[in-house]
Length: 269
DNA sequence: ATCGGGACCTGCTTGC
DNA sequence: TGCAAGCAGGTCCCGA
Image 1: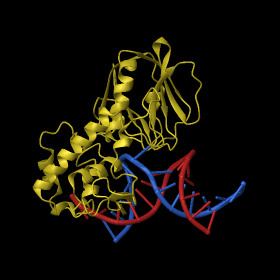
Image 2: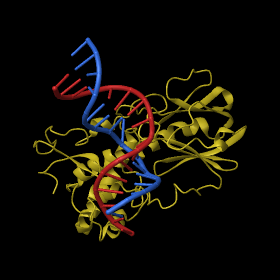
Image 3: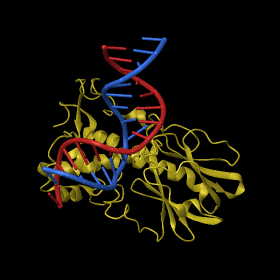
Image 4: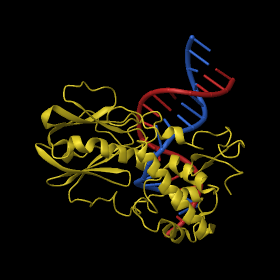
């Protein structure tokens, strides 16, 4: 489900319900996620949440002391529901809040994570992350600089969270289509002007997806269970074999970095 | 350092 | 109709 826009949509959705509230206790039904749920998180009692934020595809709950770090993996989601709502399948962790609500972590594939961060921002998973694409003033130059000497496909480069965060398999494909660049081009041999165009496309695509409330595929819904609407704007993702929306040519399908990839051989060069 | 491939896990869709 | 294979939004870790 979640790339940057879906995580951002989730943050914005839960923020007003969670900020300033107290976590009374935490119920862990299934601790075996990507990594075991941190015992420090499971043991939280009567702790105030001071802020809800996002870094890359990680969601952070700031507490009076320490942080809870959440990752939604491929199929995770967070919802705020009434405290008496019975848990369904794959509802692995509940954060019971004061005033009769709870924040519920749901994740069928269990690639997600619920971890403890003792000193804010200080965690191995957060170290070495690249810049936020929507906040970088010179993303194109950054990508160009970081790509020199690299032979990987351009799509793989922009999906590398050490280079730039938040771009996953959907938005990488959409951005490359919008920029008119083939996804399989060796990253190190792409020109500056094309990186400038690509950076603009990444920012436009991510921004539009956030405005639409994310892309809904199988699992994603916002905290009210409402779908994201960006799916209607998808030009290439999941459309292999269908006609290109720009030129009508049949869209090509391939695999890059073990991830399926769709592009138009006519519009993308 | 960089690269490709395998691993983690469940559920839905596809094809025989 | 039934069952197995294939595929899905992520990313860490390993060996070469």
